[in-house]
Length: 439
Image 1 (cartoon, rainbow, N blue to C red):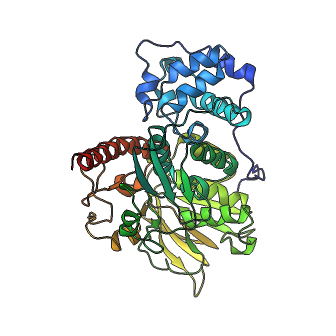
Image 2 (image 1 turned 180 degrees about the vertical axis):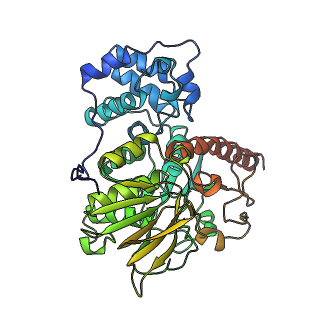
Image 3 (image 1 turned 180 degrees about the horizontal axis):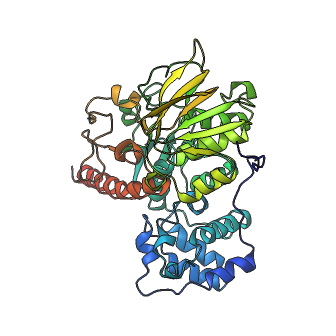
């Protein structure tokens, strides 16, 4: 571990703008006739319009414009891949000075959350009833968008608190839990009902939900089942999944479990397999939990990693070491991990290890599909959907979206897909209501 390593806390890493700084940054926007930043945003946020309002100090108008496209602006302002999306397309980026759109979005959303700038007009809930299974980015987007146009929406969440990956899969230092809670409260204020500690496939089935009078059901349960690398020793004590580590750390921070239940211990030597954003989160979380040495093992090069460069840079500053073009080929130990064999460029070496964290992807769990007739999946368990109405599964009235369909992606891409599914749900429910009226 680097001697320059600074002990890190779970306090949010990035800082917000002051009012003066935010307005000054907003004034840099050229308000392009053909805004490339909007093209780069997966949910087509009206970026120049709300930035223009912010530049004049009209934060309420800015927030109203943002709400037109996003249910989670304070989240997106923090965890979106801005460098690859909106900011990456900003025309000022040609001079290496793109407008800091993500930070501005965070500023407006936080200011609104703290000051309560606007209260949206609630539509009468007469258009239909929709059940949403899962309260991650896709589920919250579906719920918020449908509630705004007159649907009665109920979210069913298996955890004790809503938020899905936002609450249990992204560390506090990147996305404070109070920010997630605040965004969810805004969605509840639209009339959405959230029911936690309720597992569909166990407490209720999809058929039960239809029997309770729902016109359509949306499955947005993400990819909660982790993949395990098939290498010797992968079942030893001390081998864990990254999403498992992140979830337990979140529960510990909420005082739901003790420190002893978190798998990374103080002073340990930890190896993280993978180099996506989840791997970065796991490595940086291990540092914060007191690991003495954290090593990332990746079989490709730095130019091929899926993690954001900013996440890599921050991990490096915090003392995480990176092993490129390397693979762990065996984990050793009698009952628990004691060492790993690493192969790099045809050479093999053994390193002492206390913990191995796998961050190599997830697939959907089968709880809902296995208890419901008529929902087909592909060979890897991803739910199959139709183009018309968009998002509907092979069972009428049951829709799916986000990672459970698209394979693991980012928060905003789950939101992007959910917005398309909203259109499919609206068409379907409107159609069955029309048929009911005719008959």
